[in-house]
Image 1 (cartoon, helix red, strand yellow):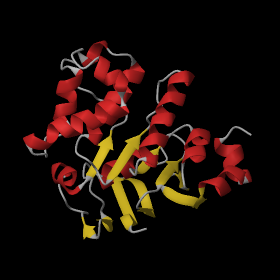
Image 2 (image 1 turned 60 degrees about the vertical axis):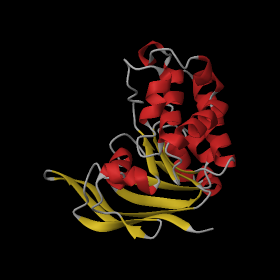
Image 3 (image 1 turned 120 degrees about the horizontal axis):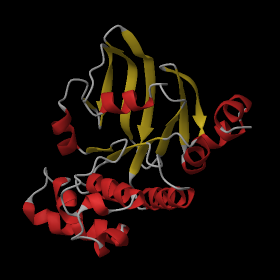
Image 4 (image 1 turned 30 degrees about the horizontal axis):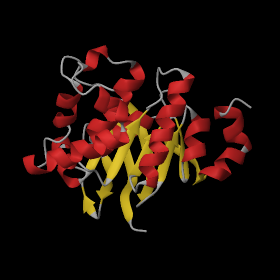
Length: 236
């Protein structure tokens, strides 16, 4: 099982605010790795730094053996790194299919049809609504669309930022079922999630972020049994 991502001692600032303080972790091929922590702990900042939207002041990020610390965001999609952003951010005025096609902007036209067919197999609901304008979809359907759009570039690593945010419990279950099936079909996933119980249930390994630092890490099953994690994040 090869290493896909290595984040090594990154420090990220927003002006004078030290947002990430020496964060290090790794993701291996075929894993679901989750980052959990309270609001403001640095989870989304970590994803946005990996995906090139923010720059670390020090430290390095290696993807598939290549240093990508200074690589522009749009170049990372071509390299096989795709992100489902927090809050979904689908193109509300475009149809479902147009949104999906936007996710394949790095692909050859001849490949797009095959990618669309795969996404529609994984998300039958999107196939039913392929001509519908995205702004008229439910929150759960928009989340599926954001995931499908990210998968259109056939990523080696799929990063997901708070996929359950703002969804009703029954839809959260559905989204996590989809994440589980994506994992079973071979997709490597880095998951940032407020719902620590669901995230730890599905993940292979986990890292706890607190005020910009990794404070606990290990197999997800162990973290589910960790007293500190249970009292801070699992409401026990």
